[in-house]
Image (cartoon, rainbow, N blue to C red; front, side):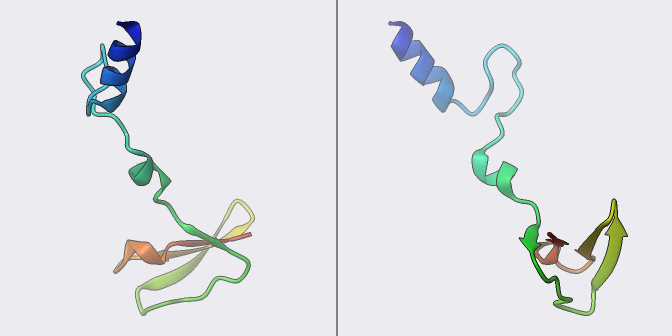
Length: 69
Protein backbone atom coordinates (compact mmCIF):
# COMPACT_ATOMS: atom_id res chain seq x y z
CA UNK A 1 0.00 0.00 0.00
CA UNK A 2 2.79 2.45 0.84
CA UNK A 3 4.57 1.69 -2.43
CA UNK A 4 1.38 2.52 -4.32
CA UNK A 5 1.07 5.87 -2.55
CA UNK A 6 4.71 6.70 -3.15
CA UNK A 7 4.40 6.04 -6.89
CA UNK A 8 1.11 7.94 -7.07
CA UNK A 9 2.65 11.04 -5.49
CA UNK A 10 5.73 10.94 -7.71
CA UNK A 11 3.68 10.94 -10.92
CA UNK A 12 1.37 13.82 -10.00
CA UNK A 13 1.89 17.30 -11.39
CA UNK A 14 1.66 18.86 -7.93
CA UNK A 15 3.86 18.40 -4.93
CA UNK A 16 2.08 16.71 -2.07
CA UNK A 17 1.19 18.88 0.95
CA UNK A 18 2.27 22.17 -0.70
CA UNK A 19 -0.01 22.45 -3.73
CA UNK A 20 2.82 23.97 -5.80
CA UNK A 21 3.47 22.69 -9.32
CA UNK A 22 6.35 20.23 -9.56
CA UNK A 23 9.42 21.27 -11.55
CA UNK A 24 10.06 18.94 -14.42
CA UNK A 25 13.66 17.86 -15.09
CA UNK A 26 13.55 19.15 -18.67
CA UNK A 27 12.53 22.64 -17.62
CA UNK A 28 15.04 22.78 -14.80
CA UNK A 29 17.92 21.79 -17.09
CA UNK A 30 17.29 24.63 -19.53
CA UNK A 31 19.97 27.25 -19.02
CA UNK A 32 22.93 28.25 -21.06
CA UNK A 33 25.50 26.56 -23.20
CA UNK A 34 28.93 26.11 -21.61
CA UNK A 35 31.67 26.31 -24.21
CA UNK A 36 35.40 26.84 -24.41
CA UNK A 37 34.94 29.59 -27.00
CA UNK A 38 31.80 31.69 -27.10
CA UNK A 39 30.67 33.45 -30.28
CA UNK A 40 27.98 35.94 -31.17
CA UNK A 41 25.18 34.17 -33.07
CA UNK A 42 23.03 37.13 -34.14
CA UNK A 43 22.73 40.91 -33.95
CA UNK A 44 20.98 40.75 -30.56
CA UNK A 45 23.87 38.93 -28.83
CA UNK A 46 26.26 40.85 -26.55
CA UNK A 47 29.36 39.93 -24.57
CA UNK A 48 29.14 40.49 -20.80
CA UNK A 49 31.87 39.86 -18.24
CA UNK A 50 30.55 38.82 -14.83
CA UNK A 51 32.38 37.23 -11.88
CA UNK A 52 35.51 36.77 -14.00
CA UNK A 53 33.72 34.80 -16.73
CA UNK A 54 32.67 35.75 -20.21
CA UNK A 55 28.97 35.42 -21.01
CA UNK A 56 26.90 35.94 -24.14
CA UNK A 57 23.37 37.24 -23.55
CA UNK A 58 20.84 37.68 -26.33
CA UNK A 59 17.78 39.91 -26.31
CA UNK A 60 16.23 38.38 -29.43
CA UNK A 61 16.67 34.64 -28.76
CA UNK A 62 17.24 33.19 -25.25
CA UNK A 63 18.68 29.99 -26.77
CA UNK A 64 21.84 31.94 -27.64
CA UNK A 65 22.91 32.30 -23.98
CA UNK A 66 26.46 31.01 -23.46
CA UNK A 67 29.14 30.91 -20.78
CA UNK A 68 32.84 30.45 -21.35
CA UNK A 69 34.63 27.87 -19.24
